[in-house]
Image 1 (cartoon, rainbow, N blue to C red):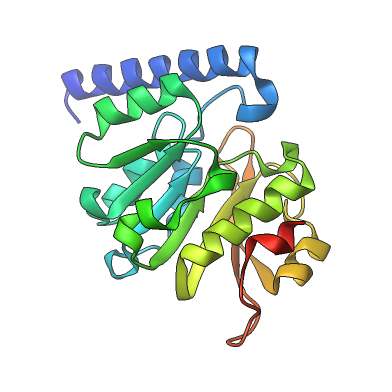
Image 2: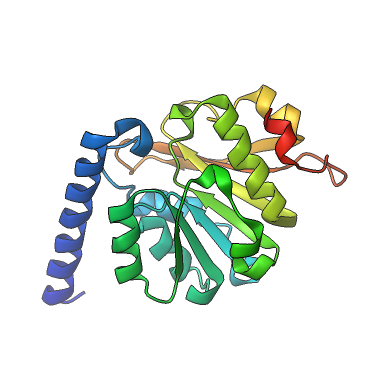
Length: 212
């Protein structure tokens, strides 16, 4: 890597850290971290994702650390949709990834028709602070995501905690199961990634009433 590239990477990292700190200071529960995720976590959460799984949806991309990793995995920009609630992050993402669709909205209100032109997704990658959300919102996010996922598709979620951030009773109620993909010890703080999938081929149909 050349000197100019190193300086550019450092400047981007500093900008991302400052942006995260600013948003955390105004809404700590919405962000759930005071610094962007590192490359080790980004590599882990996207490890199983291939171009064959496109289109792909990312929830809570923040400054785009996971987004860059997804593009490195070969996901075409035109096959990637980002859902970001924060206005400043959404503006930053549009500048950094002009060919990627960025929707500024609440991840609990996923619209089928606006995601990948209604086509079934192969994967959903979540950078959302699930542990800080009320139970009803977590269920709404999962229901919305699995309504968009094709058979065999997966929802990837990371956590700084010691166990899966989605409660077992929620998984059971929605007919889902969680498998730990691994742990990114080099991330600060260390984080684990879980793959959420349907528990059986004939898992229950998802509808918004299940969140009630």
